[in-house]
Figure 1 (cartoon, helix red, strand yellow):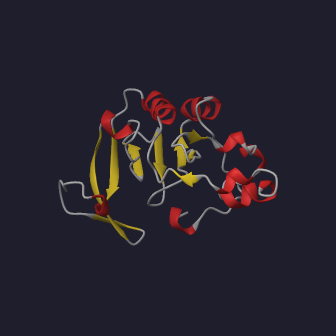
Figure 2 (figure 1 turned 45 degrees about the vertical axis):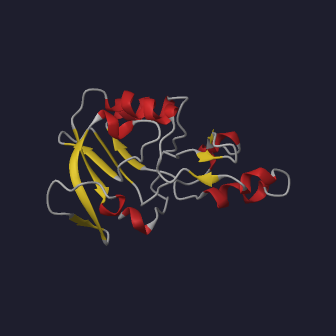
Length: 168
């Protein structure tokens, strides 16, 4: 799931405004996807990453997908969140584990880097300050996410090479 970029006026801009996300492998980054537009659409280079901060549409779509599931999450210790226990070490970084509450999936809040439910229906992971999340979901949730017009989602195919930081 690709998180939107931010324009110079502070508005969210979806990847699909400029590129067809289904045409690219899941490992594509923004600059690879838009390099051919730079000469005619200079503003694509002016967009900045949301750095994991959710816009209202993305937050609503994620909350809809989560529904009434109980999720756990990991948040990077560098965000200054008060720890509930000893940090968990993942991919070279320390994270605090906590329950995912509705306020964790709100507009203006940073999405937790990792989240999952105990019944393995939905999970996601991302880098620090992400511009996308790698998600795994049961078929109905996957279809809901993929068909949701508020989101830009591309399936991971067997030939895709995911970033090393995802830990694939």
